[in-house]
Amino acid sequence: ILAELREQTAAEKTTAARIKRLLDKLEPVETHTIRPH
Image 1 (tube, one colour):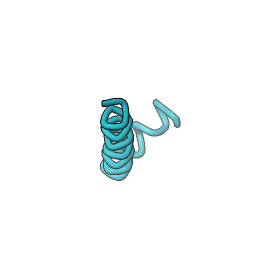
Image 2 (cartoon, helix red, strand yellow; image 1 turned 60 degrees about the vertical axis):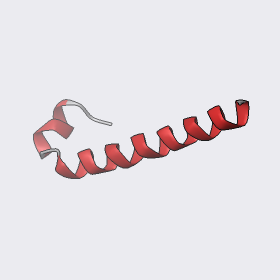
Image 3 (cartoon, one colour; image 1 turned 30 degrees about the horizontal axis):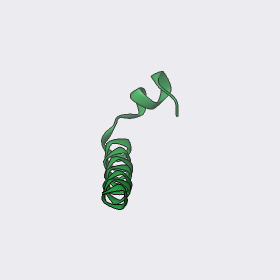
């Protein structure tokens, strides 16, 4: 069960990172100046 949870967490982290990259591409430049990384 622990291994399954660990794999699920890793998958969620990769998905979150992938979504964040997509959002960074879609976000306008103004958003980056207001909310810098």
